Length: 344
Ligand code: TYM
Image (cartoon, rainbow, N blue to C red):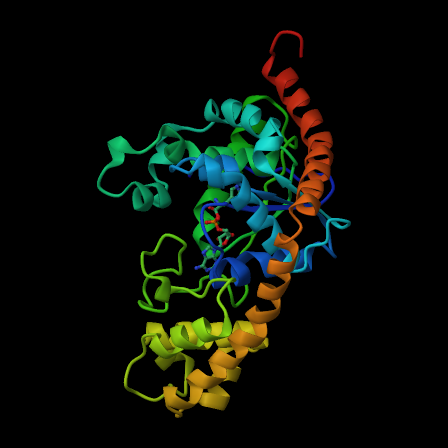
């Protein structure tokens, strides 16, 4: 993409990320995102939101959307986010996201958006029937991040291209308005064993909320029996587990299960292979099942507990939105001044 020489940003470090309330959360969301959010809140000022504006780029039942937002919030809390440490809020409650997104739509270039692979995947064969919002979605994502001048963005690997676009928008805005260090160049935090969890039915497709087969994913709300059934049915090959990382890389389903086990037990893939290499899936799968039940079970229990108190969730979201607005409003006020709007 366009080359903009980065200028050192002198502002404070800040973490921002979000999850769409468009379906039940799965193991990929948990390991790729939620676990990292909970860790980072102890290291930096952290803003975590529920991306409801992003969710409506595809149809969402109005009767269900607010409840889906509460469910994501409950999952954040169950994963260990603490509202006293992290600011947790619904995206639509902070109008500055939308306001900055419009200005960024006039900064981003059509060619940049044309390259976004996620739009191509999500719009499928019927591009002309997709919402315009689905196409400009990554521009709103840039506004989410930059309205807080966030410097670090923990996400799974599928968001990498959107983060590159965010950096391009920040660079072009800074360049066009002659303010070289106004927006930071946010750094994606992708590394880690959970960055790309694949489907349990197909090791070449990522685990996803939108996969029609529920057996393709472990949901955070799955009970022990469901987890067991899904692990038993998880696709494998007839060979024993490989002994080396090179051999593992050539076997996507085995690679995925080893990666999941490692992420849950805090081990590298090499360490997992040192224990299970040469052994059959009949030995490995019960251990994986155990690790999943131990890892997801307590989160599920907490999630259900938080959901039983929607008034408390709403209180957390309202307080979070208020605090988020306090940070976002001055950024938009400064941007309006830089753009030259009347009265700004
Ligand atoms: P969403 O809701 O699709 O996913 C939420 C987070 O989960 C990660 N993730 C995965 N990680 C590992 N393996 C997988 N199979 C897997 N599937 C999903 C995603 O990478 C993401 O981190 N566009 C974003 C939401 C968003 C956002 C933002 C994120 C809107 N604005 C600003 C960061 C900053 C999305 O659709 O995530």
